Amino acid sequence: MDITPDSTEFILSNLTERTEYNVTVYAITEEYLHENRCRDVAQLPKKLKPSDWLPNKSLKFQTSGCEPSSQLKILEATTESIQLEWTLAKVYGSTQCIRHLLRWQLEHGGEEHSKELDRNATNATIPGPLPSGLYKISLDSLFSVKINLEDEDDETSRKEIRFTTNASTPVQFHVPAACEKPEIYLTGYTMNTVDLFWNKPNMFDIIDHPEKNNEQLKIHRRLVGYRIDINGRKHNTLDEDNCQCTLTDCQPGEEYKVELIAQTAFQNEYMNNMVIIEQNILLNFEISPFFFLLKDN
Image (tube, rainbow, N blue to C red; front, side):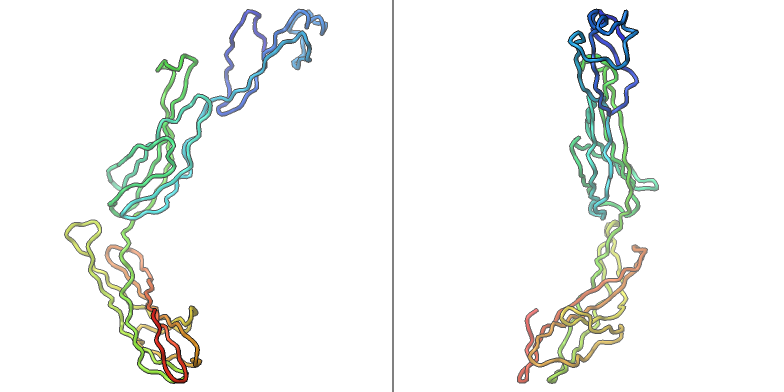
């Protein structure tokens, strides 16, 4: 574009945000016009030929803009806390990131809570205790954007804008699931067999209610069955009514690690899903032609 010889400034309009530009200012001299056999500037081609009679100056710049924090992830959500992380916001040109605001609210009428975060923060923790339910979590990125070319000290030259990234997560109280370990006893052995017996573990617990003061929660477990592993490999499965088994084909002089695993399930008025839990106890022993040796676990 052409500007008058006495101009010392010019405003470029309709530029695109977050875009790099390369601008060159040419001083068209009479000598350059004569050199290119032109009477005036309008006759010059759009692409000017280099010449000693064509002084110029180039500069590169990037227009301002911003990208809000993104990829808000829920790392862990319990009644104790919710752990979050995200990708840091980006700013370009004269735009400034001021701070972040983390907001969370329990759906269906819950009160909204918030906490301010540093502009360079990429993670945060929502503290508990947190009532169970579905939480809506919002991360606001607040930016200061220059809206005119006035001096930076002029407050009217800037305005604050906000972009929001949302996520949601359910929070549930995790009932202490594992039952007590089954007690296992050695009741007999031969050169190649071992007889084992165990007591059925307790299937009932009473714990403090996670959200209601002075109330307790009753946990009723159901025994699903047992699994026996030998030296880290599955050997056999038994139903819930069995409390004994005989290991056969044992080799004298070899050490055996026998693991009895009790498989239980529980469901109560506080948990909607049936959960399968395993609890185990380990027994080490060695058979020899002259003795049976129990090992420390």
